[in-house]
Length: 148
Image 1: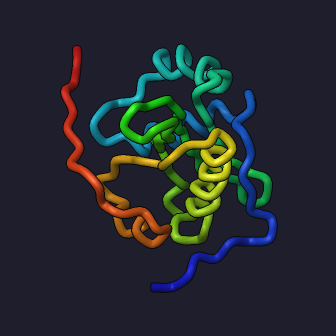
Image 2: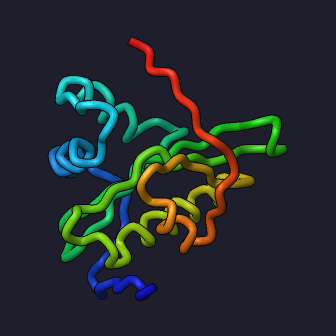
């Protein structure tokens, strides 16, 4: 497998107010089980950006937002301390495979370590090879129940 190519001007930073529209567009392209509605997105945007248990990061190429990661950190009993969870991660389709996703995951892992998380977990349907390449291993089956 080819190693991803990170450009010299690629970066990761916390999402800011100016990222709202691009994150909305990326979330719409990312979602397959739900249709992302603007009103619901707007209700969550500032709350998630400022929530102490959330991390919302933006990957940039040439200083333009090109992807995002939304993750959470919470205490547990089973892991003897906090764990972190990657909820959403997506990169603009034309930039996938170029290292931006890796940068986001690495930045999130640094934040998880800062918070003394014992592990990072996630559910994925389409990106198992990506996460395996980053050292993640399959651990459980994911179930869900959609509430109306």
